[in-house]
Image (tube, protein in one colour):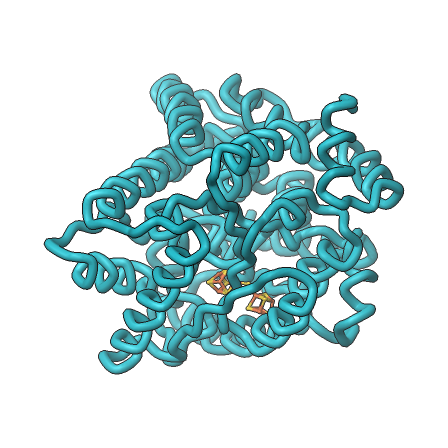
Length: 424
Ligand code: BJ8
């Protein structure tokens, strides 16, 4: 651990004692999930390095940008448009919220019977163990679910926080409301950075965002092949890094990985033998360092080939690269793009079931794992409708309600093992 890192963390007000415990635990967690993977692509070295130095290089980079006059905006949801944030002259990073480590700190302010993602997210601030939270000038929340929107009120008492109000539906009136809310967010950003969003810059940033998404789609496309050229664990890691890495460098490194995977596909080279049961994982996001589901699946003889999740296709499938004659048109285009993100916070949300069925077919999958975080109202309740649809389509599925703690791992493993037996 370099002295520069420690100096920066101290300057950011990190609780060094707790942070040391977190940093000490991460290599073991990473090795536990990724250590035994065979035939990992060379291109994964970059992503390993980024995660291996998760609180180092990138935090220094952001600190340098702040010194040069930029601002840092931190988010928890794909409904906060990166291109708009970038166009106002700020950096945008997605905060993790995937660690059990910070759940107890979150529970100091939140009920225990709440989704672990919400508790973990607030816990990072309460425990002061996340340099990304500490370095951010503004945390931008959204009203996707009740737990989150109330959590942002508490977070707002600890750090400057702004909440984008989302409509609960996708109809015309909801769209108009959302466009209005995006305009208000643009104004907020402009007052934060002192820079005006222009048509030219927003168009360019939207193009950069589409380049990043395109690179991720290339990786996804290779996973449609049997044998899969990359494990579900590695593919998830790439998606997780996409939320906090520099977008241009990320696209470049992801395209390099995609070149390698496309070569593998040509040669029929895979990470697991041809015929390994192929699974789609669908449900709540798998934020870093939550690797539990693909880890269990791939250690019990299956392979995850796609994620119907915001850390996955729900994010990558919405096309950026918006164009328009004026800012109103561009913002309307961004609203349309985001409203194609089929999160369970919307009603109705039948498109999500369509997406799962489509992915099952496109990725030549054998089954679907419906993986929802415990106490997540929107996803666990919507699960019933998804299950009905999958039964109708005769698609085998397994529903798992999961927690961040290691306690349910044994039971989950037994259930996944039994499911894979049925698929075989
Ligand atoms: S667009 S999925 S990133 S809201 S799991 S906190 S819903 S109780 S994370 Fe999400 Fe945006 Fe939707 Fe995607 Fe609430 Fe459920 Fe917890 Fe959730």
